[in-house]
Length: 308
Image 1: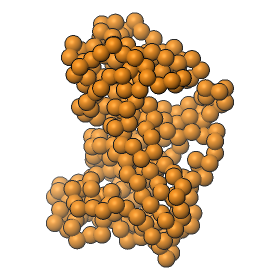
Image 2 (image 1 turned 30 degrees about the horizontal axis):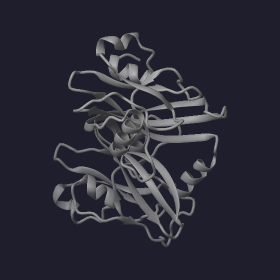
Image 3 (image 1 turned 90 degrees about the horizontal axis):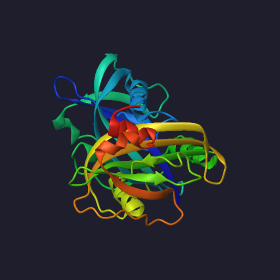
Image 4 (image 1 turned 90 degrees about the vertical axis):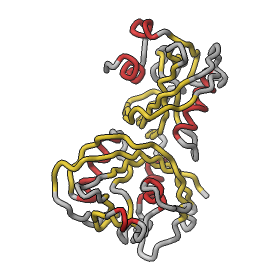
């Protein structure tokens, strides 16, 4: 089956009774009748922190603000009747309701929002992703052809966007990587790549079918030959450069969603780049006091020096 990717942002909201807000998938969706977390696919160039607010408003009529980042994860959904298997990068926020009125989406992929108690969750037909996040038993998601599904649904839309070679969407995982002495590991961007000559947080794009944290540890090893342990998730953001230049001189509309983790290397060694002819030219450990004097990327400067 054809492999595709999609990035989505979702929210978990609770009321003062502890109930959770869910939405029911409509006849226009790929899985009508199943209950899901409010949220959906990000628009090209959209910050996930804003995308979850937009999706929540569209599907529930409520205004929310993110108050916490719960997880980033990936799963695969099979659509055998379309010959597609979808890798779905999912960003889960805890959100707080700040306004609006509860109302269903009009002619969308959901049709009914509802507050559901913990005791009622097990009685609902939840999609596997929502069941996993809510701590309920779940199975691998394989979607058979619905009788009245919209043929121009989310998977088809995603495929058309990916078919445009000048528009690049990427999900990346990066790390603030430290060792027992408090040093920070950085990677030098190779010539010909966006940001060439700047020191960057180790990491990069995750592979199809790969969990974000697993992809980050793989990238760290490829860029520096260091073996790390993921200690926690810091934040998720995005960078959109509609006029980026690719390594072969091709202009690209480049959109990257970036998850940043804390990573600890218990037994540091001398960094050595293992990937051949890649985007990393060098990797080194730096004392924190030397960081302000380095040519850092915006992401590295924001995470290490807390400046934009």
